[in-house]
Image (cartoon, rainbow, N blue to C red; front, side):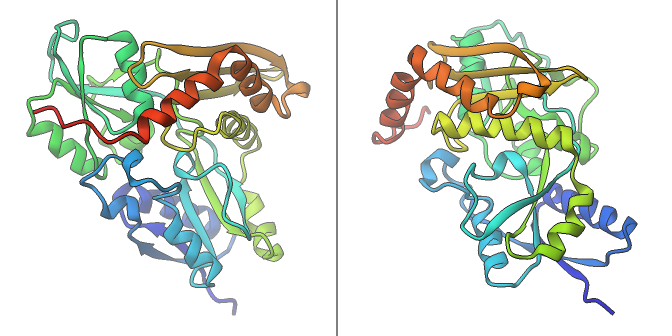
Length: 311
């Protein structure tokens, strides 16, 4: 009898929900598995914004190492947390069907047009896009798993906090009065789950291919190509969303300055049979239109000594 597959996952409620979803899909294929939860650097370092940690893949490195050391057979991630270049020896084994990619605002019924309104998010992308729309607001950093952030919001004077709709829905924590931020371009691959395994484990990769959702895999690949070509990593204020119909692909991509005052963006359509490499093509287009200068300014600002926190 074959040994159960060892599924590596972070130990947060959302990560475990995702890993159990993969486990159920494997069970439906007659494949037994067991969960191996771990804590990542991103889960342990909650006193600093993600961009200040100075490393790529803060939520994935621990599981990458476990895979390479044969402590687990596969790892399940929120795809938006995964670096655009995987660790040597690892590969994308499957991308599951995407949940809604929308960001939502959980709020306390305050007047969002009021100046000095405080909105919480740890995402530079959300911060920049919010400030582009509400330049007189103040953004407060908030870290932790979903429930921790919900608790912090409830105990704070903030007017609201921004979350991914998919995470709240998966945990049955999405309030009925949450405001869908349809104008906000999500993070590349937001709402999608990915399974990572060793590139040399051909029999396992064949098994896991049954979990792959081709449409989601195509769209997230294009979004991540866009991110990679802009050299943004997981923390830069870059949004990207690809969607498809039977005949064409729609792509939206945007890069904002950290304060939201500047941006370069694209909103285009392409026939589906020409979609391969489209994310890279659109990123190169934006780089030629000023995104290269904006990225240099962003990196310079992020590498500068941090400002004294607002009291």
